[in-house]
Image 1 (cartoon, rainbow, N blue to C red):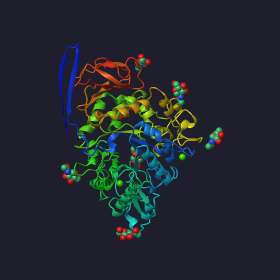
Image 2: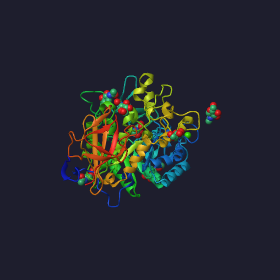
Image 3: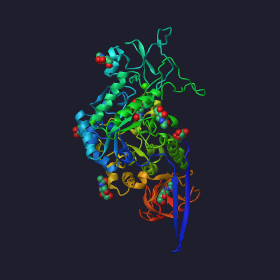
Length: 588
Ligand SMILES: *[C@@H]1O[C@H](CO)[C@@H](O)[C@H](O)[C@H]1NC(C)=O
Ligand SMILES: *[C@@H]1O[C@H](CO)[C@@H](O)[C@H](O)[C@H]1NC(C)=O
Ligand SMILES: *[C@@H]1O[C@H](CO)[C@@H](O)[C@H](O)[C@H]1NC(C)=O
Ligand SMILES: *[C@@H]1O[C@H](CO)[C@@H](O)[C@H](O)[C@H]1NC(C)=O
Ligand SMILES: *[C@@H]1O[C@H](CO)[C@@H](O)[C@H](O)[C@H]1NC(C)=O
Ligand SMILES: *[C@@H]1O[C@H](CO)[C@@H](O)[C@H](O)[C@H]1NC(C)=O
Ligand SMILES: CC(=O)N[C@H]1CO[C@H](CO)[C@@H](O)[C@@H]1O
Ligand SMILES: [Ca+2]
Ligand SMILES: [Ca+2]
């Protein structure tokens, strides 16, 4: 979908001294929705904060985070100014994939606490004005779920709960051959032989994560009951895991075509984004819509056209939004970070998004390295500012608000199955442990994470400098910056205003938020690794005023001469490496 931006500038020159007032009338046809008649929904009012429960707070000293550990830190969540807290999986699980392998969808894993703890957590977050979103993992259960055991034994209605198939053939050693060439996301065939049943079962992820069969009515009803169970406990919605894999082609004898350039690669035309998947999502949306203001966010890594299908359309809405991972992918490291890349990745989403839908921006999660390590410590504030002030919902992974860094994890300490699989020589390229280490709360015992003497992953040695308490106490810090920007975000301009991109090039990125009758704001980022004096007029796409008022700059800034409230000139804006600033444009 192609949209055009139209700009018109008009000058009014008054000879009272030499005052030039520039009126910039900016209009754009961006697709995000105009204000709801009944006011913005909660997920439109502020950010989503992802809590990785194993690593947030440990209340009982066993070295692994738990639900009461989250309760203990609800003040931090409240102070951040986010609206929604999304908890990564907390359900009963053998932890082969750290909770993404669920053996009981309606029970809390004892590692995290009890159902009473969960109810206390919901009450505590609600009391603090926060919403609670759970991770829903519908594609697969654990192989230790009783459904699977019963299915393997062909017990009554459970017989078809999973995706079972006969061997295609047997080789000369009498080893069964899988029905087709489908591959697991974690490598190797997606088919595992069950000696008990004498058939293969399908698993998109680990063999310990058998895919549920969404062509079975009982399975569909069971999973709806799971949604109802948690909604009835008062949760405010779900983040749906790995949704593009939900349904597979009905004919299990079909091979997926191989890539002509790389025969190792398959085109996943039979295992992803199947039409039936959208039908199931539609039913889930109808289910949550029967409750008051509940959110459905879905995880989809795919081509942009496919991702957008998960929004649905005006008449048939599906997810409130699919997660936007394009920024994460485009800004993989500092060498790919430049003004064009930022502009392109933002426009990609806004241009493809269906009419009337709501954007979102993801900078990090438990599967990707820390922003400070991938892109530079100096970029932490600027990038938080960008995602917090663009139209749409920003998603922050815990620890990114204080600029936590990747932690070196020895082979002996490696826990992530994805890391372990690659062995001592290559685990570092694949392990997701470095971004999963405990939250750094203070400079005391175990960084304030636990009273115990051990933690499930080591604590980063930099906790004495990088921690919540120190950043709360400091005048300028990542945390203070984050909180300040979430406050600014409450202004009408950021809630409803348009976005335009005046100047961007290799070293600079900028955008304007504007709303008639309200102040306009200009955000500028120096993406270069050197200090620069930037002329924003140079190569600008439309007329900018000569000067503006400083609102806030990155905590890494050393500029003493431009405190908040001071005037800066847009033809000579001095920015240190990685600095982001927010400026208020003069009113007409
Ligand atoms: C199997 O499903 C049928 C139809 O929904 C139901 O009537 C029956 O009670 C189920 N049997 C068991 C053992 O759950
Ligand atoms: C919306 O999506 C539904 C379901 O895919 C489809 O039947 C309908 O034609 C679409 N409506 C519009 C206006 O595109
Ligand atoms: C940076 O990211 C790009 C794109 O993902 C990749 O091609 C390149 O190898 C990366 N560079 C480094 C130094 O990691
Ligand atoms: C932790 O170590 C200290 C010092 O060795 C010891 O006094 C304390 O009892 C230990 N705590 C736990 C929970 O094991
Ligand atoms: C807070 O800041 C003050 C003044 O810089 C300092 O003396 C004190 O040690 C700090 N406290 C903490 C917990 O960092
Ligand atoms: C940027 O300027 C600051 C303050 O003058 C200085 O401390 C810093 O070393 C400079 N950084 C670079 C990369 O030149
Ligand atoms: C970002 C995220 O949640 N990734 C998860 C996607 O689903 C697989 C399988 O459930 C997990 O292994 C990932 O951690
Ligand atoms: Ca614990
Ligand atoms: Ca599936």
